[in-house]
Length: 75
Length: 157
Image 1 (spheres, rainbow over the protein chains, first blue to last red):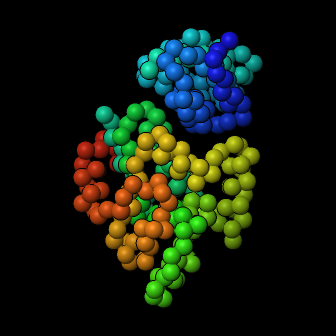
Image 2: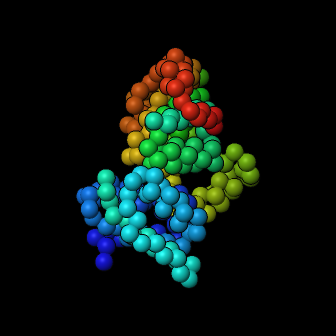
């Protein structure tokens, strides 16, 4: 179970990424964030951005049109 | 650090949406982002709640004709006497897209800097006290060029 959750169902690009970043900013290093949504382009956008920023991707799933990303805040 | 400068010359809904989203998208990637608002683009950064007395007729005309802030913008195409704009705003709401005013606040939260160009403000009679608080400073062309010369990407909206 992640420390925090961001529900991005029904949100389109780039808002899921922006909501993810805004929430991460308010979290402490080491905490985990689960983000889920249904807009397909946001999945690679969020995972690529998190990798570039040096955050840890704990898990990524994509089933039945809903993706889920668990991120551990590193910095 | 990668740097992006955007000149926002137009005061239209669709162009403002594109400009703010590109600016924010770059800022979350860690880019240094500066938006320079000039001429019609100044209408986007007017604060509808901050009204100042206009002195001469031309200033009063600009005051009435220009958009009163980010939520008062019209589409650049498909105007249809305002129907196009209402339709687009309705679609944006239905698709959970933020309003332009909210996008501006979000861009600021991500670290985008806002500059307002002084010359057109003088010509149109727009005073700095009428602008939204997100505006960092009113500046001249030289300041824009200083920012733009180090930029990796420069866009004109």
